[in-house]
Image: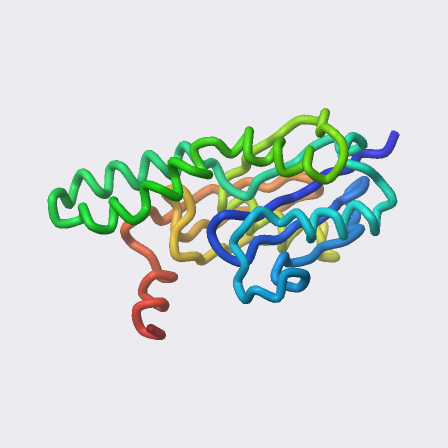
Length: 193
């Protein structure tokens, strides 16, 4: 039996989609390649359509659709951070809240509606993975190695900013993490800005 998995990144920057069939990458594309909008953050409907076309399948044939982070855990971090710096962080909070209210707090509905617009209802399972697990999976699973040490460095995911772990076979285990606000990625961003 064939397993089709669609991976989606959206509503932050550089939205994209990838189709995996039985552990092999069938197609992957960034939305900006189709919309010509640099860093397009919208729902990647054109990238998804491309991936499904390359795989010769329709939306209803997807077994899983996976989003690259756990939005409610990330929202918890944002609320805790804004409350810790109130009232100084109110202006930033006021800018961030509409995006969360419009998209990220309703992601299951947004994703299902976006997939339905491609022609057919998505009947598979919708999954949300930890952000750093997504980074680790995108590097380890396509690699030629059966076992590898894993290091992810990012600005911030849900709470993690860096993580260490190991990949073995078809399993990833992240064993240690550095948590927000401590972040090599944010330090790098500050310097390059």
